[in-house]
Image (cartoon, helix red, strand yellow):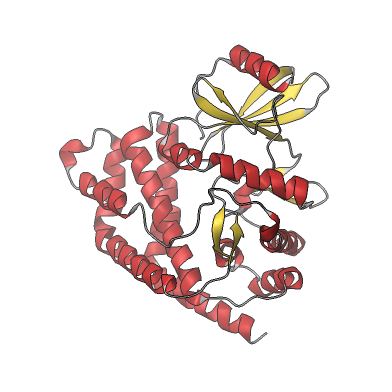
Length: 345
């Protein structure tokens, strides 16, 4: 979330002291992410903590459904599997992974010094480290105790929500501000292409369900913006809200665009066995475009109050979602080429 909310900071400090035993001196809002409210807290000893609060927004409600599982997984990866380059929740005085603050779930994580790669560009050295980290996570999946684990079903749960949003945009009388009008101007001319991509994704999901796939614990959103890279170029993976059992392609497709052979061979050096399924990669690529589009359509129509947030979301719709939908055949062909090149490597 990019707009700072109204939070009773004194109450927040007191709650953290009572529940965790941490005496907080300063709290700074971090205007990043779409799921929760992010803060960096500084303790008296100049030690820092990362705080995440899950408000009653659409995206946060989805994450809250599996929050106990996602927090437990990254905690176990760190403590039981010695995977240290990740964020993990700190325990309360009573050994809990989270608390409630003003009726909203709150978790405190280790603070990782470094920077997000907001521009999405990684050096070859960093790309190799991402690959090796994902391979280690996937390889250690069988060491994690799985309770109430989310499992990939290859369904498009947001399909009706996206179609309904587009239908609303076609009703000019329901567009109460300039941002909704702008969104309508962007999407209505692309309605047929969007529906076509939805249908292709549904068809791919049905086809994949008929296959036997090798499922591992996937982060599901290891984008560069969810990486922190320190001055030594060590790579850390954060924001585990969407972790689930799924084909490894769910994590791998994000890094197939630049130097895919380096990425995939580095992964295979640790995971050892890797065969890419084109249908699965296409499914996740299409799915992500449509999932993000649904999110931004919903927030612009129903949640956003600030113009700054609306402008940011509209930029993402135009430069990310619609660009890919308009050029979907080009991306599909590139994925085919990448798989062929890897198989022939």
